[in-house]
Image 1 (tube, one colour):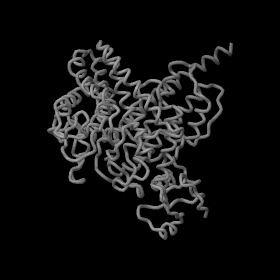
Image 2 (spheres, one colour):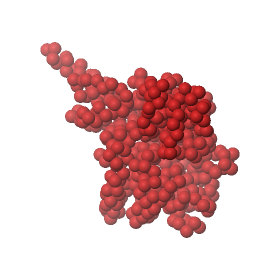
Image 3 (cartoon, helix red, strand yellow):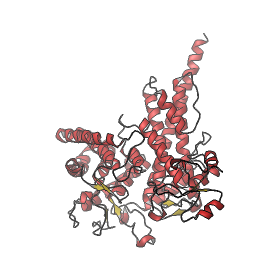
Image 4 (spheres, helix red, strand yellow):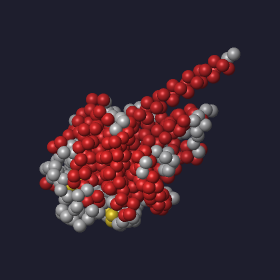
Length: 508
């Protein structure tokens, strides 16, 4: 048995607390390490080569979820919104878990959840306006009042439900991502209102909230803060900076529509200043999260939540695929369940928070994994949208190959570049499907209830039950998938008919 495996290529073969003898009895290799996140019990070189992780398969044509299963999860999700009709969002109703530690409204989670709520319901005003109005009122009443914690309520982390009083205990604060995230959500709702002729409502109700949050952000975006997981501190987290940028750019558009040129220019210039710091997170191999946590899945969360529909870091970018590749490899190495699933023919890959995580045993999380699927879908969407805009659009040959290599799918030769791009778009959809399919396999036995985490060794769900953020990310990924698949099928039909017409003309 060849146990000469580099640290970066070691894949977890054991479980928490396994001894050297138990590891060897399993037929695995053993080598202690002082480096956090490197498994001591790992697969041999021969076994590692036979285990494909992440496991992508172009034969996968759907993520597994039926429409009735989607609806079941949507109902679980809705239960956690608009608590007692007052607009607050509970992180989880599970009061048995750590004496109800999750029965709070987190500012970050709430903003992301309400953004997901609108996207899941296709930004339909008639469907979303009542609950969105309640959320807006809840924020206005509670998050923008003075705080007893000697910090601004705009950067307070969490609030009691249903009354909305800020949590007064010890916690990692301030959390500076909240103003930008709320702004993204406000702007999304503002655009829904614009589309339904409710400009006055945007001006009187939504704009004051946007302006209030961004007054703080413009002056304080470089402040020391807490990471996405509320564990470490730094003055420069990728997640915060990238989502702040989007919030400012979305607000700039709203300001322009309302005729507030001073704010429009201010938000534009602040976004440019933040953008300069984002570039510093690229280390030539992957995007780092922050000074205390280089490899972290919050980077992918930032990329999908903070993308501004412009040409700055589109999900097809070389830096994005390289970052995803590194995180795929890290989490394949980290969790034995990834190896087990691959060996059992279950496609995909499960992501956690960061290598060496110990919270609740340090497991894969539904919400981080779902965002990987979403990133693949959004990369496909970028290709398809640009191909739809102009048939002259093409992809750099090296970037095209990099994506194929990352998906472990052999690239093909095409005479027609449109066929080449459509083939890659299809492969990316399939990759997203594979990732969601792996989640599917771990929740179907629980009637599609979603906990926070999946046990790293046996695949059972663990930690808090019915986490709102888990549902939001999975359902949003499925909605993105639906939109991308529709666009893909439209383009396939278009180019097929175009070829038929061309062949017909050539026959004369």
